[in-house]
Image 1 (cartoon, one colour):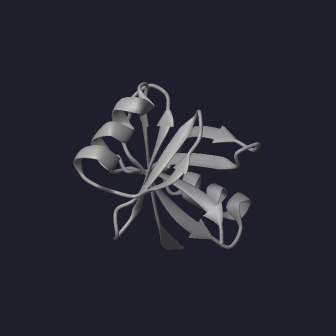
Image 2 (cartoon, rainbow, N blue to C red; image 1 turned 90 degrees about the vertical axis):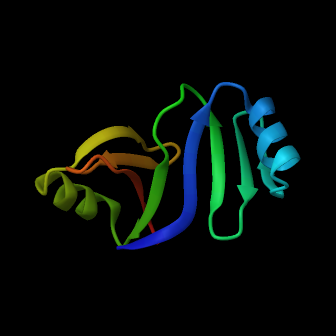
Length: 104
């Protein structure tokens, strides 16, 4: 398992997110759609998806999502959100970290 550079957060007002991260902090916008905006912060790419605010989600790369999901849930992780159309499998580990697993 390896970490990616992407961190995903949620906010209802993407206009305010853009005004703050691009306008105030000066981060270049790398993605701008109706449902998501992304910023290149240097070390990570920070994405905001339209939705209720929750904890930041980190991205981990795995060789096989199904095998990793099975192994991680056996180790105590809980599936927080799963959507094959995105694709997305958000898990929360025993220590509270929320992360997405995706195939490398």
